[in-house]
Length: 125
Length: 204
Image 1: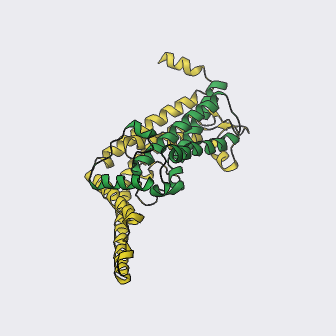
Image 2: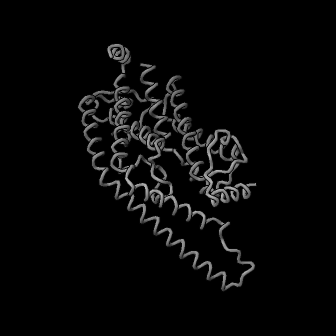
Image 3: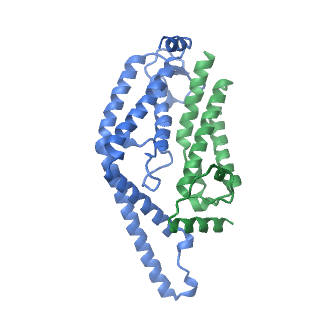
């Protein structure tokens, strides 16, 4: 299944057809992915997770550096679960787990800290 | 304006909103300058497309499906094909590295203007918020982060957050995502993307 998907992507590229992006593709395990497209999707998912987690942590509020570790594990778990279980892609085709998991990691971590600090400072003081 | 000022004054740490607001405006300003001086030039566009082409070509050459089927060929013929494939890959890699280097150089000259703008903005923020905590950290940072997060603040409370740290977080998160959103992020195929891709340093 994974070899068929990657061969299909290759044929489409060789024919010069750009893969149009549709949101239905985000939940389609049979969709074929371009490396750049997949990287961008994972990046933006990470940013949304970072922002939402930061807002929630700041609102409750959750205090302590342990929540930074919790966020990193949770965020990476969500990304891994998404590409491995929902998209069912072969990570070797896209550079391995490391490449996929680090997409947007630093920016999302910064966004999480920023949202957490801002909401905590404004809502609780 | 008066309404905004009264809303801001209701918050003890309203300075943090000012810092974030200025960071957002700075990010747009820097990307606007970069677009004017770098991104709209034909040199940048052609270098970027050559990097994209070369990296995609390299990927397809490295993938197992593109390797020669040696089972049906003689050993010497397979060896010759493998050797020529390696040489071709080396040529493409060299071309990719040269294009990446040329791209960096083209950004470097124009990045100086952006660096001056950022220096001025940082100086302005520093003069506005020196010695004051603009936010409260919900955690106690480790020592080397504390040097930045507690920079210039009176007192010993490690959870007091300085303008410098908040501005740093804003720069990383807002500018990286803005570059990504506008399509100005460095191409993935460019050498040295790294584990922690920062906002493009030549334009920041």
